[in-house]
Length: 120
View 1: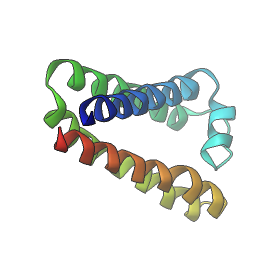
View 2: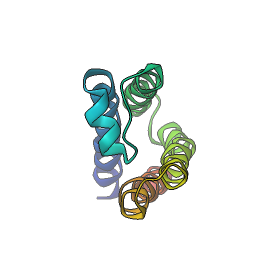
View 3: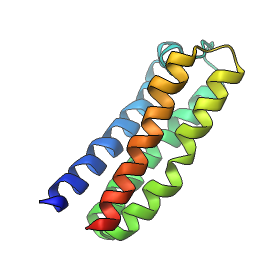
């Protein structure tokens, strides 16, 4: 029973981060506002889009080709991104609700995913 939950959560998270990356590439202003710090389109938003999209695809590839243990390590390491995002939003005038309700909550969810993948 744990295996479908572990894989399902990891797949959903990977797809969501790929979606976020695609949104930063296609609608950078709207994505930046949703991130919690309004910004005009620039190279940094494109970089974030490429980063997030590639992390989502990499997570899916690890699940498909390397298994739960490798994907668990990936999730553990990649949780640093939403933790950093929490600090970025707080240090740049974003709301605490966005910082903790979106970014910190994402980090916790990614860490739960890592734990589930290690338990499989």
